[in-house]
Each structure stands twice: as structure tokens, then as C-alpha cells.
Length: 172
Image 1 (cartoon, rainbow, N blue to C red):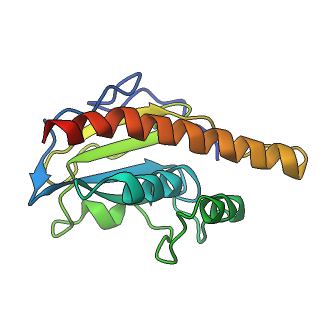
Image 2: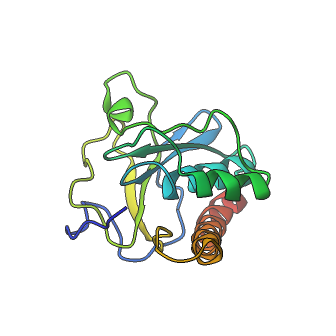
């Protein structure tokens, strides 16, 4: 996965602030869409983390700007080791969430080392758009070095999720 060199999309932040209650709340929870380039690593891991730790206050989804056909095998292995893997984690594109009858999102969180210049900005329901700067785990090296890069990305996503969404949960 390569990072986009584009400027932050409207509403994107340079660093991830704590998510405030300003997002659209549907029923009794916030819908959060995590977006990465191909929906094979970052967004899938973030979806798994928030699905587990969202405490019923958040419903997590993931998508890619240019989705590939399968979740990265090292992401699957990592999520299995963390007991977060679910068979329903599959790659999908942003287009599914841009349709007029799509689930309304409270937050769109793009995940990459740099914000995407081609991230859609007109989402149904006018969600808050945020960017998380997270390391890219795709690297050359030994199997141990590649696994270490995936664990680093997982820790960064877990930290971002905990610091961003725990404050929102506490406000409810």
C-alpha cells in the first residue's frame, strides 16, 4: 500500500483528536467507517478493534478507496492471534457507503501515513472526516520483521482507538 501525497480532505485533521459527540448518532450508537487505500490491512484491523472494544456505543465498518480482493494474510494472522478475527471481515469499496440508501456514518476515519487526496468528501449524512497517521506495515524483510511491522500498526490503531473513542463513550 502506498500513501497518497494529496492534501487532507475537508474536515481531515493532521493528528487524531479525541472524537467528540459532534458526529451523527444513529439510534444508540455511532457508526464509524475506517478507510484505507485497499481495505486489506489498516481499515480491517481498525474495524476489528472497534468492533471488539466499542462497548455497544460504536458500530465499525471498513472500506478501501481501491479495494483489493482479499484481506492481507498477515492481517488475518495478527487478528487471529489477538482473537479479533471474524469471517465476515471482507474487503469492500467506499462506493458501498456513498449510495443514497447506505448506512449513515457518524465518522469517516482515513488511515495511512499521509491523508488521501482522493478520499470522497460528500458522504451521506455529512459525517465528520478525520485522518489518523498510522504506519504502513507492508515492508520487505524477514518474516519476523514483517510480523513486527504488523504488530506496530496494530498497536498504533489500538492506541488511536482507545484515546479517541474512550472519551466519547465516557460522555454518554
